[in-house]
Each structure stands twice: as C-alpha cells, then as structure tokens.
Image 1 (cartoon, rainbow, N blue to C red):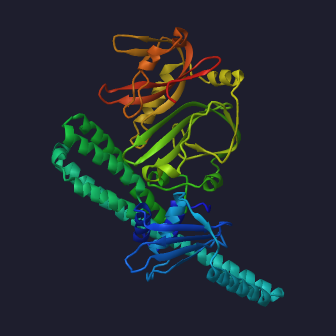
Image 2 (cartoon, rainbow, N blue to C red; image 1 turned 30 degrees about the vertical axis):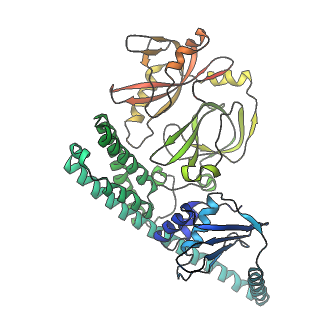
Image 3 (tube, helix red, strand yellow; image 1 turned 45 degrees about the vertical axis):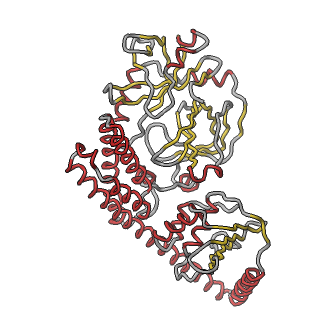
Length: 491
C-alpha cells in the first residue's frame, strides 16, 4: 500500500477545512467500498454524500511523485474532501479489496503517455534539449515557490490559532483558577476542535489535558486538580509564547523550511526519517538494548502509546521509542512488545530535543543478548547520585520538557526508611523512590522480588520526576540490572 502521512495530506489540501472534513468522513465510516489495484498504483473509494448517488473518488499513483485525484462530486476544490478522505483511509491502513484498473483510467493513462511521448519527440536536438532543461528548471522553481508560499500560509494560520489560544488563556488567568469549577467547558472544547483546523495538534492535545483536569475537578471537587491545571497551563502558555516568536521569526526571515527546532514537533509537526537524516540527526551501526518497556493510554491524545527505553551499548546514551496507536484506528496499528535481545540497527535517527531523545529506525536485526552485553550495559551506571539529581532538576524545571528523565544508577542498597523505600548510592547519598502519576505502579514490586540480593549492589534504571504533593524530586523504579540479566518492573 502507498505510504501516506498526515503531513502529505495537509500539504495537498486546498485549505484546512477540506482536510478537516476529509478526516471526519474517514472517521465516521463514510466509505462503503474500498478497492485498489494489485500493483498499488490505483485506489478507489465509494463514499456516501449529500447527493442521490454515492460519489466515486480515485487516486492514481502511476507517478507516485504526482498522484492524480478524481471524484464524481460537484465540488470545485481540488483535491476535494472525498479525495482527502480516501487518503485518510489509506493512512489508517484500512482494508482495500483488490480490483482491476477501470478501462477509463487506463485510457487516460495512455493519453498522458502519448502526450509525454510527443513532448519528448519535440525536444530532440541540442537546442530542444537545452530548452527542455530550462523548462524543467522553471517548473522546479515554480514548484518550490508554490511550496514555500503554502508553508507561509500554514505558518500564518498557525499564528492565528496561537493568538486565539493566548486570548482564551488570558481570560482564564484574569478570572483566576478559583473559577475553574464554574468554567464553561464548551468554550474550551470548541477551541480544541478549532486548533485542528489551525494546524496545531500539539497545543490541541495540551488544551485537552486542561479540559480533563477541569472535568475531573467539577466531578470530585479534589483541589489537587488545581495543581494539575497549573502545570498544564504553564506548559501551554510557554508553548504559545515561544511558538509565536518562533513562527514570526520564520516569516520575518523568509525561512519556512523545516528545522531541528523542538517547537516544530511540539506544534504537531511530523518528521520523516529522511528529513532528520538530512539535518544530520542520524547515527550508523548502532547496537541498542531495551532496558524497559510499557504501554499506557493517553486520554488527551485518545491513543495508546507503546514506549521502549533503549541504551546504546557503545555510548550508554538512553533514548526512547514511541509507537502511537490512535483509539479510532486501533485495529489497524500493531501493538509493539518487549524486546529482550539486542537491536542491531544500520542507521538510527534521533529527534530534536533534550533529555532522553526519541529514536527511530527502519528495520533491525534482533540478536540474543549475551552476558557481555549486560555487563557493558551495567558499566554505564552513574556512581554518584548528586550529579544525576542536579541534571534532573535543571531538566524538569523547563515547563516544555518531558515530565521525567531516565538515568542508570549504581546503588549500594534499596531499603525502607521512615519516609518509604529509598535508594542509597555508594557515597552515602539517598533518594526517595515513588510511583509517578499516570504510570503503572512499580514501587511495591521491589518488595516482591524473589532474591533479596537484587536490592544490594546492582544497577538501577529509574525515572526522575517531580512529585507536586511532596514538593520534591523522586525516582520511579523501572528495571534492575545485574551482571547477567535485566529484571524488568514494567513490561
């Protein structure tokens, strides 16, 4: 099946509303028939509409770089919302029945090939060849200008959405969080829907988290939701202000191309591996061992996230892999599972950011983990707690950062004190262990380990996080690394 991304769909859409309407058609099951040719060059969908008859929309990929879209609907937009909906069906991995390419499509292809052949005949000779090259360059230049103009329009649209969000946040802050219990949620829900049309899925997800906190407060009256709302507001406000400056500077300097600024992804941008490689964010011949794995449901995103924590066996760098499974497309996206071996990756690509960077790759060879691999992994464990805590404080105080920082620590003992389970390093420093909100609990599992020796003189993979109720940094247990194995507390 042709690989389709939402970024490609948004780039093809004549306007945000068309893309949004196409997405809705796909999500509501508007197609009664989906077919594709055996060679993956032709796709067809029969879609219900407002007319008496269903609409037939097709996508012709005889030239993958320039697909041709056709639809029987009366719309003057190109591609129309039905064509975009067909692309969303393809992106979601829907099941397409194999069909023959219709005769009228084959005839149109023949006519195009005939026109192309005649054009080539006219371009014989040196002068003609030079003219053809000149025309090609002009077309490329025109295409580049059109692409640049489209990106500029998108940035302006994003700025409109950010201004709308900033205005709503000012109103909320002016009224005070004390009014949260009486807040009209419809206003926030309406803005959340609008942000999708402003190409701002990132701020949209954060706003959804604020809505969840307000809903929870109105339901149970627990004042802890105030702190949750403050955290969300701080992150959303920081993202809005930084993004406005970032996008305004791009327009001012006439630089609309993608860059490795973290804000691109925070706003909802989707990276291609090739784009990150072009920015020099890749590494060849990498051996990665998975030290932890867990799956969780994100209510604000409406999707499950499979998370893998990987450690580079050469550098000790800890990175993260994420597999997103939207609730509405759950049956079409395969759930990832724990990897117990070592992934030999020919080229790994790392996303922009700080802390534990996201890593991706296309294909890998999984070999069994040997004892030498585990020993090498353990050798990366930091002997001092103070340096790691300091790094965590500096990282976590950034409202835009991930809520946790994962590190590997060598410890002398894990035991119970008056405050609770505590980890102690060889230099006598200690830190309180805890269960991070929103994640599966692992704290009590430490007390259920079959061997007491696991609680002494081992390596500890944990996530530093800030506990708001305790107003201190704690360490969430993820795994214990011995000389011969990784004991996972999450899986």
